[in-house]
Amino acid sequence: MKISVLSIFPESFESFLATPVVKRAIEKGLAEIEIVDIREYAGGSFRHIDDSPFGGGPGMIMRCQPVLDALAAVRTEQSHTVMLSPKGCRYDQKCARRYAGMEHIVLLCGHYEGIDARVEPHFDEQLSLGDYILTGGELAAQVVIDSVVRLLKGALRDAATTDESHENGLLEYPQYTRPAVYEGQSVPQVLLNGDHKAIEDWRRTQALLATRANRPDLFAVYPLSEYEKELLAQADAT
Image (cartoon, rainbow, N blue to C red; front, top):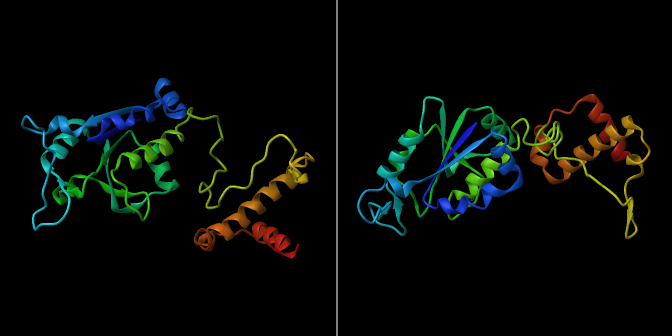
């Protein structure tokens, strides 16, 4: 797949593109990541990409022309265009999965006080990481890229993402590794006895309990099976 990022700070992606999973995906040909400098599409010797808002107010607004010209330079019939904005729908794992199946994604990074609203109709959707404000969209773009690239087949070992938090509507169960005892804290015995059915039951129970305790909003809409109801009943009884 290909991901194009429209940004006025392309240098902020240099170290990010060298991180292990992203770098591996690029080197294996699983992903092509293109960073486009919006300033290159601004006219005049000073390449102004922002101006004062009509009606007054603090801050500066990114202008239409440079943004839309940069978009036109990378957009194809297969492109899915995304405007990173606090006004957008909240990003989640389902969205990451949806993006991972696309051929080409274009991410627009906003900055300053915002982007001229006439840009919005040229994008397929607006996307927000959450209910907070970032200085610019570059960090948000990196989050989206990382979460999508790691889902591409071959980027990680097979099945590495299957039971992760948010993949199946639940948070992930606790994980442990050597040593079995550290400063008096022991790994749960069930993980050491080789009983795969008991391990599966324990992991599902822990995922249910973690989700109920930490994300009641997710737990409230999760469709509990009879098997899971029984596991919770047993856990609550102990």
